[in-house]
Each structure stands twice: as structure tokens, then as C-alpha cells.
Image 1 (cartoon, one colour):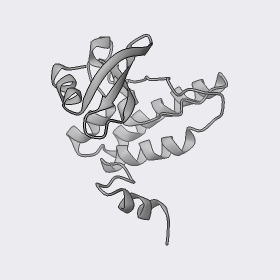
Image 2 (cartoon, helix red, strand yellow):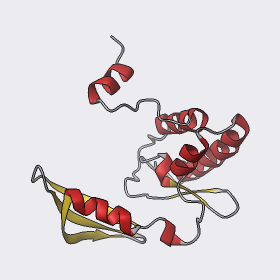
Image 3 (cartoon, rainbow, N blue to C red):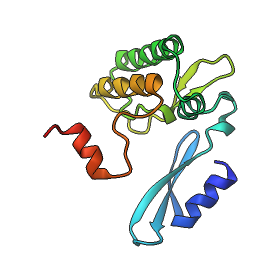
Image 4 (cartoon, rainbow, N blue to C red):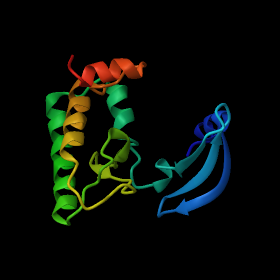
Length: 156
């Protein structure tokens, strides 16, 4: 995690003890400063992993506004291949999003963060959302208002 990101977290949360650790991350108990609500915060320095200097797919999409169909196709094939492998092992990733796809030095995607991985197969919807983000440059159900998001996904 970059120093600036850590400082941003400290503006909103009071960090407490570590309640879990993984290969590349730790989870800390925290308290939201305004509401007092207890939360768990996963702290992970994706760039410090070293093998993916291209950063997150999310940042890449934002930097380009949106991807061409050709570039989106190349990335989406890699996503489908990774998910097919995960499914072939009897698991579902369950947290597919552009932030959990890193770009390596050869411009290939690497799927990360298997913290929600489980036996049921529930990744197809997320893959559709990823394809939409690749081609449009933004998420299909994104809005500042939660009610506006609900209106987008729930036809009246």
C-alpha cells in the first residue's frame, strides 16, 4: 500500500490489531471515526508484489478512458481462461472486479485476491460486468447515489 493510501485510511479509520494474514495481505480490525462502527480492513500492497508492474486493470481502464474492442478481447480471453481454470478445480473466485486483475510486464492479466473463493460457481455475472467495464471505461451500475444504482438494476 502506498503511503498516501495509508494516510487516506487513517483519515477515516482507527486501526487496531491484526485479525488475519495471508500470502500478500493482512486484515486489521478498525473503527470508523465518524460512526464508531467496527470494520475489517484488508491491507495489501499490490505493486509491492513485484511481478505486476502494470498495476491494476481498473487503473489501466481509467487511464485509457476505455479499451478498443481488440484490446478488450485479448484481456477478456485471459479472464475467461483464468476463471475456467478456477472453475475446473471446483471453485468460484466470487470477487471478480478490475481491481483484482493485475497487469504483468508482458501485458498479461494475473487474477488475485482469492479471499472469497468458495465451492459454488458464481463468476459469470462478474465476468459480464468486467467485459462492460473493458469496453465502456466505467462500471454499468456506478452512481454517487445508492438509490440511483437500485433504479438502474431494478426495472420499474
